[in-house]
Image 1: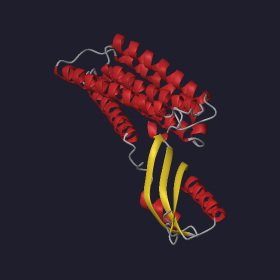
Image 2: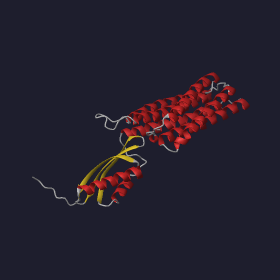
Image 3: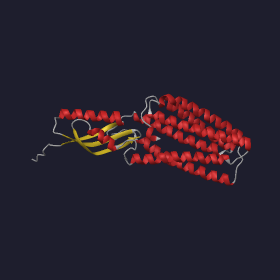
Image 4: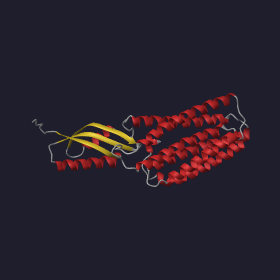
Length: 293
């Protein structure tokens, strides 16, 4: 998911990849029903996973461009997280249904049309490769597009598995390969769904992002000239890949103009080295006396 979605100016590659993935998902659902293949239906579920992931990334790109309001001071980034949490829960239910159906078919095998299964799987592989091609260039420049690219590649891998399953059924008539493939693809769906749910919950709980080491951030700030100590460091995620930061900075008794220079240096460090763009800094003076009136 999620954690790799962030603002992107050119949304066209995401729209194309989303359209291709959604189209193939519909084709696989129809093909799965007509051929009796659970592997195709499971792969359609995997396609649904990536359709939702691509939709979340596109949603993030759209809402990232909307300005903040006086009531929503951080803008509308969190809509991405709420959508991810909902999608993750739905996908967990889909995975459970796939496991249930696969176990029933292992106990009581169902005849599968290997030819139709193979044709649809090859079409799915071709569309996945086309989607990966569309996203490949942008994946080198933007984390959002990179996440979408990785999802489409994972779809291509599962499509290869279904192609192999179709070939096995055609050549050997071994129908058990179909529910076995269904279970394997269901595991991929469940893994992605659990990751989506856990990551969304962590963001909503404002946990520190696992990509950042708080101690490393504090140590880097302490090395800036004029800073004596850094404490009460807080880092949290506004939306995936979009971090906020607050801390207390202890300095000597210095001019306000010098503190402004320190602030600029801290912000530059946090942005360039750690990707943090939202900062709140509170200065404390080491030698300043507190005067009571």
